[in-house]
Image 1: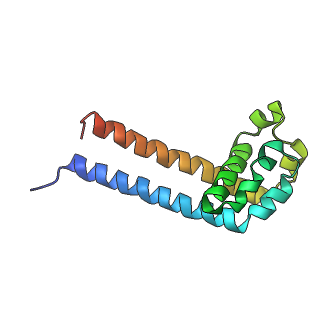
Image 2: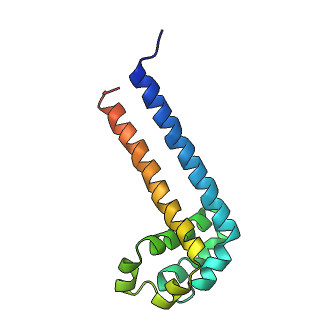
Length: 128
């Protein structure tokens, strides 16, 4: 039995998607365990983060929950500034290198999820 070119491409894209999500999860956990205190110290006047801050003691899932909230604020600060969930001074004092890492991590995770959802749709429609 031979595998068609379409199936090989589908398999390669699937492996890239799952591998990317595993790398995303590893980097997110690394940041959540090594830089969480630094991030929370810089965002101590942001209500939307301080409400979630106690969850950092809830293990890996709790730390990822808090990290996701921080990534959301770093990626789209205007939404949080408008409704009072973030403080402009805290966002300005946040370290630039860490902010860049969080933004890249946020968008790369979104890209991998959209990639896998697209593969699911292609598979569900029977195109491969």
